[in-house]
Image (cartoon, rainbow, N blue to C red; front, side):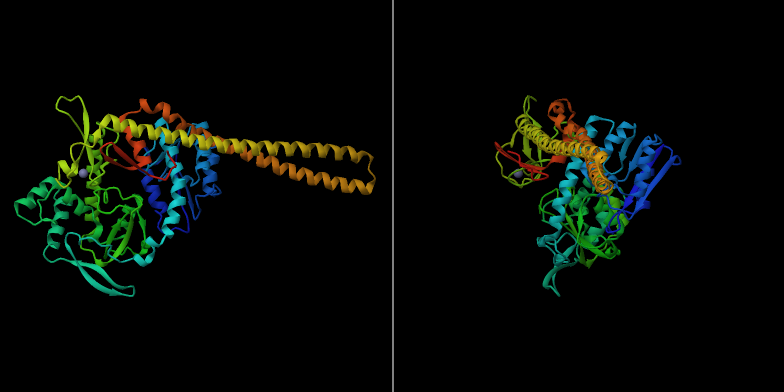
Length: 507
Ligand SMILES: [Zn+2]
């Protein structure tokens, strides 16, 4: 029987409702009628003390469940350790695990490796994001401020006054706002391609944002910007699912205001396509594009990107990650005329002629070898850290076992003393035995805990196995893992700079 597990905590208003989670999970079921639903409302994912979750575990142990479906991994648990233990338990009872958001298939080794990496990141992410959200940069004081740069297409900048003092805000540009609405129409309703739209605009001599000719990249960038949308809760959810952080509460998304989307890396072409950890704020100006049209456009662009990625992934697993170190545009591999060597070129130079870098950025083989080496080092380093934790855990277990032995001996001595004791001293000896027994039971429980938590090692083994398994992975599998670990690779001739997703101390 399939089981659906949904969870929502009380403290987070921005999380997806239990009903929506269940609906999304049902889509994964072959026979949606034959399922059991477990839903914990108002429980946090930091521990497993949740009534419905415990009922699910009981049913797993009773062999009633063959598959567990959940909306996201963190619905099950927010702790890497708990998660590891659960995966072991699921495996023991032949239960497969399915997450609709992350698209994991735990029946394959690669699926399990990605699962472990994701969980490691989840923990790191929670620690770092919480800190970052508290940072001044993202404080609510920034709310409503236009963060500089030229006005987006369809808008002009005007000066406004607020309690924060003078600030720039946006207003519709009467000359171009009509064209902006037309772009959404053409792509979202008339199903024209980006290229067709660009050709259309050029034929009608519509001026582009920077005066040069229109291309599909420019059109896509404009459509990606949520500055013109009438932001409602669906728009909120769309960005939430992509890892965007918000400076407004969900209840403020009332279908009138436009949005600012900003991130760590300004003015690069991934600004709107990879929005993880970017910040979305409601803007003071009114939106003009209906949310359902806006979202239809976003989903079509998402699909485009996926098809694009799949096509490109065939050539190298570095797809989507390599950038020109000079201009920041994507870098792509191209084979030499005789097809013997493949070099990486800057698209800023080849497609947009906005980069003056000389020749190529490096040989694909050489760059792949360097990055591969660094990823394998990461996996080894991660395993070493885990091994250290295991050693200290073993010491703690040993300490507990010694103390339990000590207590047992003391209990035996006391029992022996009892035989010769008077009535009065027997009372005290009995009390002492009870006390020792209590401590002993407590330590035994603690010891069992330690033994159980060690099962988490099975998952970590998948990461330790990565160095050996790497060469046998497909290009797509390598790309999936590299994309998890690395946010960007800057290439200059003979220089490779890796921006890791997290600050690992990799030498
Ligand atoms: Zn360049």
